[in-house]
Length: 482
Image: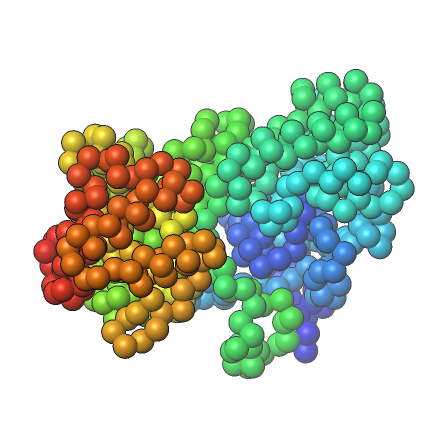
């Protein structure tokens, strides 16, 4: 028995109020789930019509199941593992604009449509000069959206009350602003009238966002067990973690139009998304990157076992609370709450997050995620943060490519791998040899965007830690900075 409206007794049909570009795992586990929650708990009374952003996708599967699918949420809450599943009933239908472009454009004529949401991958918000304004579906998402907005402008004769609120979820900084700029670029390229450009500016709102939820997606390895548990077939089963956060930079009127709070959802409408983005990058991503070389060299393989380990767990806790949080400007209680949630998420027993999967391009990750905290700590406190400095030393040791007798499968840009290969092959094991190695790495401005040897005391501190790791072993070296 396949899941569809005929065999799902609680099926409901809601007015289409949201156009969503993208039918993938993330949007279904994040946005569509939240719409489902708002319908159940806050009387939102709206559904999502999904537009397939590329030629091949899941729209046919979605329509075969009348927009229904099962979402498993699993993770840790208040220290206890949680696993639950529910059929999500917030998607009305799906449209493939490559197959029926006119059906897609007719969405613009529906007066109840108010929101546009998207996740077309980081590459989705891009300008393609080859896209034309004609009767053929454009390839890029911004071009598709421009044609939709133009149809709406024409159909409602420029009515300022028929503008849309556009909320992209692509994982790029200032995503709303970038999408808006590209749409204006298409309007100019296609010589669309000045009245339309004025309507775009005055009647529509483009929001920048930050989204956060880990979504493993379709459980292909355990799908037979899942189907047996459910008692029906579902080709769109989705799995996501329990934690979720959506920060939307937009007008406060959104709180009334989208009743997130009433539904108990972790959504913030803010004037500026930047500090929240910085918080996520520095705490969540920064903790991952600082942890990887230390925990892996110590002999651990996953994030979960690293957090549970008495020594490494304490090390990570001190990195986050003692050295990263003091460099951020949001209220301390907010930062500590977020950090607590992050460390709890790291213990999720349902997600096996391998350290080596995070280790890809660790040099550039350290530069964007941890170096800003290290430098800001030095700026504010006048001293170097010992544990972040130790993580940098451990990173240099990690790129030696050995964990005991085991080779580490390093994955980074060719220039980075060559730099380390040359340096470690020439290092003679003397203190001066280690200092030469460290100072050369810290002077590699292509990665760091600066010469880190100019940071007072950093070269000496990293060298001292590297020597300890080499001569005493990683466990004893860690203890020296605790």
